[in-house]
Length: 70
Image (cartoon, rainbow, N blue to C red; front, side, top):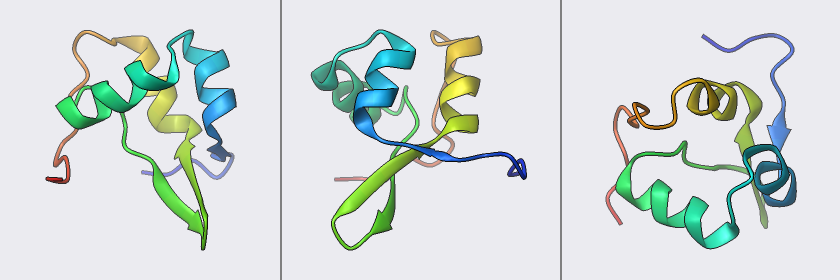
């Protein structure tokens, strides 16, 4: 369920909020242990604040429900 106050975060905000580096975020995404970004424009992606917050509550237990295969 998407919160009406949910918003998208760009990569610098995700890095700042999580304390993780860019490479770590992308590695965890490929492993399915971090939320995947969503396309928000022709040349832009972002992460839902709600998904990042869910990861922050239990980072070791987070699993993407259906990670996209690359």
